[in-house]
Image 1 (tube, rainbow over the protein chains, first blue to last red):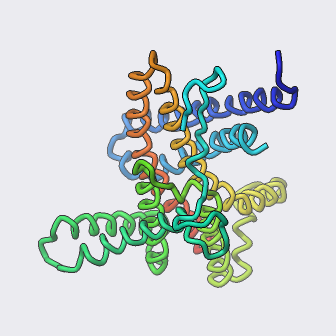
Image 2 (cartoon, rainbow over the protein chains, first blue to last red; image 1 turned 90 degrees about the vertical axis):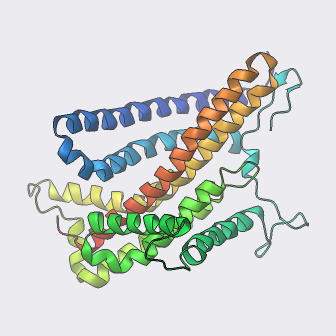
Length: 78
Length: 249
């Protein structure tokens, strides 16, 4: 075993931060799934709500991107 | 960017593609150096001019192919502004159209191999997002005066909750430019880094075919993401603009 403990912490932290990407995937899937469930019940109202769908996905996804950013910062910027 | 089996392990440097370097000689980046970022932003502007000015030069009633593409873009953004921000936001349409086209073309030019994605830099997207934030705040105060502050005072909530909600609303208002810019930059950076990581695996013979398939698939996803992120940035601008024009809950 070689390498210093700071680098190990850096890599473990990056890996832990990457969990956030999976959590964001759950969030995005929830938004899209619920949209589809609603859209199949009332297809005529679906077209008007696509903008809301994308806004919802964007908000859910942004937090996953933050987690990814933390991961990248730990890997390459620290 | 992978150097293959060097020092025993696979070396993948997915972030090297985002390095800013001078375009025409020299090695120091100063205030007015023409860098690859400058060049590709300029290319985005040239592409927009080609499409919107040269493409619509004919002004035909039956549009040519270039003209109908330009018309599709115009109609798409115009409908977005009217639907989301309302009819009185139409006077901000040129600004929103500019934002959409610039981000759209910067994203797509970044997908050309060996090119540079300007929107993957937070410095670029932060300027765009701060522009939106300042515009929206100024417009809100000019249009509504102190009434703009009622955006933070949720009058439909119970009275006890209102101070708590006001604090949350103020925080969420000031986080807007941060999330607005990091969402775009993060998405573009993430996608391109993932492509590079998969391309790096091509150095290992056993998984090379798989890595080529993966690069193709991720590239397809990136085409989608480029368009969607331009759309999301613009539609959020419209939402913020709607808040500024009609702050009452």
